[in-house]
Image (tube, rainbow, N blue to C red; front, side, top):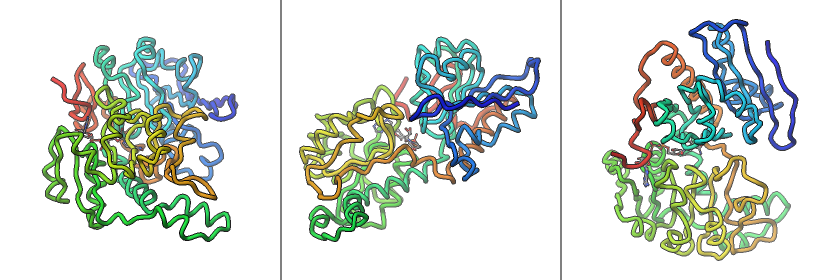
Length: 392
Ligand code: NAD
């Protein structure tokens, strides 16, 4: 049986489907809740949009054959949302960073039956990991599933900003032809200093992809040394954050969000950067202070900011990232703003990988098998990953 509720809001459609295939739940049958984004008409047009309410990660029939109860919704933001209703008795919750259902301490408190959270993608900061540990709830993600997708988006955004593509394209599409207006702020990436904050899977792939651009220097800041990255790219590790930021023409942010990185790039850290630097953040919006970024861009201290993440997703219409623009003005639009919705890690190729990864995690869970170590964020009441800060 497939029950679909109508759209209840204008901007973010509520859309829930429940698949119940056995009226009496067998003891080993579980309730699984997935909170995914809505595809609407695009879900039919592109069935490979797997990480959506319509296409249900491609696992609905598979779960049906096993008799599990599978609830899928996009409705997540209000206290009476489908998410808040169904999380109360779900054993497994599948969420996605692209449309995050926030498993806060309060929500986890209400989730009496919850044993396992699975992130369809990479980055599990939308789960209160400390509370998950206290409650012995496991948190898994599909590590590596979209790291190439994100690294490509980062390289693209760096070029978009440095080459000043956005105002050039706007000018052209509006029928303009004014070379000087755009060229006055358009540079080569060659000869610039580029550094990644976080040198894990994405950060290292970004620097690998930048190597042929003949940058003046590639650097990284991370409490974990990455010798392979140094060998592959010649990247230098900088251990002092002030020195790291102070040298950069381009900062790319590629670390997880947790208490140690929340608000890390604020007015003070921005003041350590060179005037005219560019920043690309596809990691998490809350790693930067959005108001400070806007102020630095509008004062001309930074030349551009781009990425695909904001501190709340979706952001409110008044969010600074929607409105920020460079100090340099353009007749046909704005400069210095290379933001997109959260798309970098949800390319069609990435969706195939993280959908398959979710199925594999569920298979292990149902079969009582150990998860791939790289996919384990917290388990058995402790952090398994070394990426969410240095912990005892
Ligand atoms: P990873 O675990 O491979 O690497 C993260 C690195 O960050 C680790 O080396 C860790 O030591 C480092 N780090 C942690 N805290 C740090 C700090 N305070 N300073 C410097 N370095 C620090 O993770 P990854 O696969 O490279 O992904 C990184 C993050 O990117 C994810 O946690 C997620 O938030 C984000 N992400 C975004 C998208 C997207 O679609 N926009 C997709 C995937 C991942």
